[in-house]
Every structure is written in structure tokens, then in C-alpha cells.
Length: 241
Image (cartoon, rainbow, N blue to C red; front, side, top):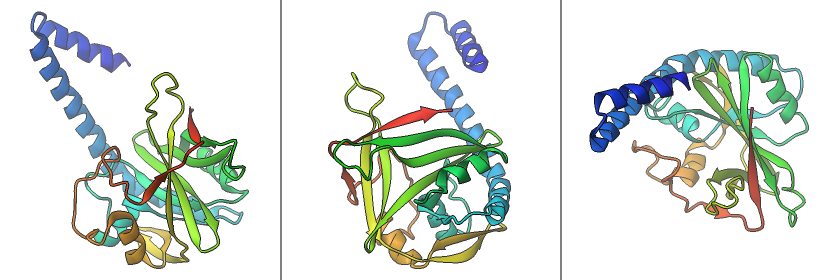
């Protein structure tokens, strides 16, 4: 917050009477700051993954955790973190141990930052379901854990968009992704041992399309939603820590 006020004070001093110049300068300063933060994320991510691998291996209760989404794509296509990624993604199978596992991480250097809880009076399976946790490692490495539900031969994950209704800004839109069930196999990623879906090509193709091996600039806000379904009569609440 202090840096925010310092930047704005500096901008006002440089161009006290030119709003356009202030706006341009503010944009450039914020962009430079964002790029610096992103560089720190890329530098610290291998350390975070090594530590996380160790903690997963030492956790003494049954838990299924695997590389997922953009991080799985980076593992398979580039054997590293994709250069424009801003966080690390994991899938985690729904079980009674999920919250305990997140608390275990919180005690060991991965600070719980936020979580999304689904609210649905018409679907008892989703009511009060915590579908996503976010933790931070050394402040700048953001890691998302998406909690997957399994039903019959399908797996389901849940993703959230900012609410359209500005009167109720705390109610996030709930999107569901359906995918074929999969087993897990162990692999190595940046020095750590992690599980991945056994059918990686099919799995990534179902999420990103058949051309997933072709690098593209990705934005969560502008992502392709062809494989997502907006769930009616549901919303999600975000809790920050």
C-alpha cells in the first residue's frame, strides 16, 4: 500500500496538469512492477515445487494431488513453467483430508491466501463445497489447488468468474468443466516428484484443444469456455486470508 501511494505521489509531481501523461506514466510504472513480480515468480517456482514435493511425500494421510491445467501443459510441452504463466496449478481429489492437507501446507511455508466455496440450495452435493484453494510461497509464488469431484466415469472441476451483478459483487459465477476420469502416474518436474494424469495428451486436448502443443498467449479472463458449463442456481463466495 505504501508503494502504491508513493507511485501515485511521484506521478502527480511529474505531471500535475496533464491527465493523459499521468495515465500513461501510471500504466508504464504498473506494467514494469508487474513484470518484476512475474520474474520473481519464475525464479522462485522451482524452489516452491521442490518444497511442495517434499511435503506431499511426507504427508501421512491418503491424498491424491497432481499437476493440472497450465502447469501440466508446461510439464508436458516445455518441461518447465510456461513463461507467461502467473501461477502453478494442481488438481486434488475430493476427500475428507483435503482441508487438513491445506492446513498442513499452511503450517509449512505455503500460506493459505484464499478459497472459493460454492453455494447451492438446489444441489446438495455442491452446497458448501470448497472447490479451490490458493496458497502463497514466499509471497510471490501463487499455487491453486482445484478440488475435483468424481462421479461414474467423469471428473469435474470448478472455476469462477467475476459476478455480472454489481449489486451482489461477492457472488462469483460458477463454471463446471467435465472430463473423462483418469488414473495417475508419477513423473519428475523441476527436481520434484509429482503425479500426472496417465492420459496426458487426451487430457490436455480436452481442455486446450487438439493444437495444445502450439504455444499461445493465455489469459484466464479471455479463455476459451467451450468446455465449460455455467451452473445455474449456484454461486461461489471467495474468502481471503
